[in-house]
Length: 239
Image (cartoon, rainbow, N blue to C red; front, side):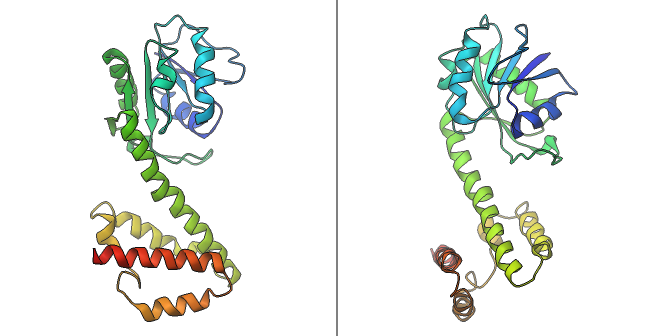
């Protein structure tokens, strides 16, 4: 099976690593499309969301229409490339990708959608070569998945950034928190997040919360985030 991965970013790099053992994979510059093989079975567009339509349109002028063309975005609807290709699809890996960071691809959930059954089957079969978690998700469901992942991953990582900066000011290494964070995420395999919630807000420990707020008097941004998050936890526990 020949696969062209159109992109040079984090997602494209990891898809190359994941698929090279089960397919003849080649990376292509999305700007020039130089060296693009016109006889590939699958073309994966792994570029930023705002570039998907442009790259897909360029491909539409080069390909005959027999191959499957899919993008890897969580938020971009199938119709964005469906307007250019008869066999169009989505090949969305739900994971945070960074170059140089090794991943167990078999645990990454992939979400598939396509314009026709044959294209969908090809995408399912391709994803199953590298992952045990392959599911169908239409454009609407992917949008909700992506938003939920932003809250769970990107927002959480920003909180870790703020925590790291706060601790650094007090000469404390953020890495000391890693066992705590690892245990927090490990528990989520056995229970829903609401059940895993701990801390002063979950206990309605207003005395500790007040002390923390006083300690953050000089950092208005972190203080406001602490207040909003504590109130949200307390209100959620009493609903």
